[in-house]
Amino acid sequence: MIDAGLAPRVRQLSAEYDSARAYIDSALALFPDVGAELEEFAAEASHVARLDQGTRELIDLLREAEFRQEHLEMLQNEISQGKDMDDPAQTYHSALETYKATYQSKTTRQRYAQHPAYVEFRSRVWEVSGDGAMPPLIDMIPAEDGDDTQAQDDDEEIVVGGTHQQFKCPLTASLLEDPVKSTVCAHFYSRAAITEYIQQSGRNAACPAASCRAQLSLRTLEDAPTLKRRVERYARQVARREEERRGRQWGGAAVLD
Image (tube, rainbow, N blue to C red):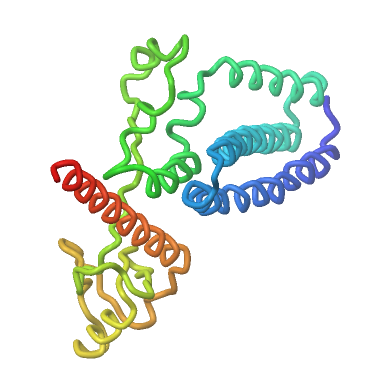
């Protein structure tokens, strides 16, 4: 029988993955904004490609850390309950090798197309260089051997596309200015417009977004600095496209002359 005194040590090993996962999550949270900046200003497309690869590698590390922690927690519970088992270390490493082999056998689509961090990264980059709503991410990742059978193996597979961020304030119908976010319904507003709206309505006011019934107050609003950068980037993108459109029009007129 395994010594129950091993349980605290296994619990400690499991807890160490909390900090590892938090570190990876913090890095993944930074990558989308960095990717958008590189897509807009970097001369070499390879910079974004390297960051894309880095995002995938961090997702790999995060998933392995999650597996390690979950399996250690399971072992800790079994040891505490006095269950008979072979060498716990061997059991753990055997399960880890099985996990790695299974994960490595998956295609790129299967690993990343539905992961929120990768969807967010590709969505931010798309906001700079794409046109309209981003198509399903699964359509943007080249198919590999094994992808054809994926839908047959999982009838409930969800096709995930990019988020189509609304950059206009529901009150002004203009681009967000100094945006703030509602903590009760996650809608965004221009700070001055929503502040005036709430003050005129009294202590609380209904969210002005269509079909939303949330009640807002000044206390339920928080700054949205990341969205502010995205709105500014979007405005630059719109201006560039308008300039390019005018350039094509002038070019066509010159040819006719």
